Image: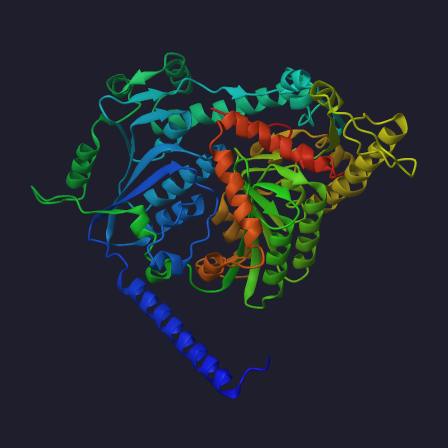
Length: 597
């Protein structure tokens, strides 16, 4: 039925009124946000929480913030707060409230360097822990002073690396993992499902990493606490310590409650007797724009975050823990940054153990095209291994921390064979096929010799025809050398630099400095960091879009996953990977989840 002219006019008027109300509402909220920005008291202490998940980057939505919706703290945001506090004359000092941050040793090193950089301002920075483990204490020692409360403990007992194996569980379920791997000695990712203990290569690499980390750890403590390395090792061998014992060993500067630490600030900052120390929390201080302090201004440099396991499609939060790097998201971000004439350089921040070979190559190609237009610099965080190294290797420069885990240049393919599980459950199945290799992905049958030969050909092509040549060209090294440092071998940042896999040591700020240099920008002037892609608008997440059902499904799965124990989530995460391999995806993946405590 045709709509009458009066109805059309009415609908237009209603639409215009709605649009005006909406614009007015947005304007009022943004105005309220500007007026509601926190004031920073003079000579105040900025209290920064170094705790929780701390993902490398979390997009902040100004509109959601104006509505009072909380924003999760990220690692990059934490570093930004230190940069701001260094130049903010209203901030007299910083207290780091450290409580089990969810970061690895690469970011722990980067945070220590940021703390040292802040100390150049001459302002005091104190670290407070209720309980200190290895990583917490390592971070804390970069501060001017370290404090524990009287009932607190210091568990600096040395390093332990755990490797988990699931073959025993799979055997009980009647599941067999059939795999092909390039670099059988070092490309150990499938070992979790095919073995019950470490192989020679895995044990060799883990011991090498532990040796280097332990050496760096003891040296850092010795330097900051004015001891010899041998003395520090002896102290570690006799740990743990309660707060008073830690004070006697000169591991901390005082066994004080938090309010007593504020009293230390009161004395140091010259407060009058009886005056209460003025503080501002990190969550409030995040609302102070960097450009209001003369930072994050000038020429524009794009920063693109690639955090999590690599997958095809859009970036997302992984179902069983951790973020996922989607090739569609990163490729679009790189292309947009390359096409934007106002962007002078691109910094790709990689924090990934790898993943899909196909997705990795798509991102590599986007970076290769972008390089023809402007410099591309990679900043490696905790880990940039296997597929994470694949997407990094052709950058103009690669920057990593000495404790970054990288390399793992190798590939594996495989599939789970579930015939035993089906037999146990009483399930039978039959295949009707056309084509000699039509059954190559049968989930109840192992590969025939012919099928395995075909899969080995595919695996070799990915490694020898794609991965190695790209490493060789990107790093300007011979193919033979690329292969010799490949084979799935994992390296620390220090070892990677010796082998020519990275260029310089440093974190995200160092990478931005290198990008400025390559783009011929003045070293003494700051730049505006522009994150690509831009955050999804709040109204899009509120009202939904064509991907809404997919997002809700992911949220439901994530809620279920978070109810499971951490070790179970870890097992399911690798099950997800094998499910994707069953579709024929080759994996460029860190050989094992290396967690050093």
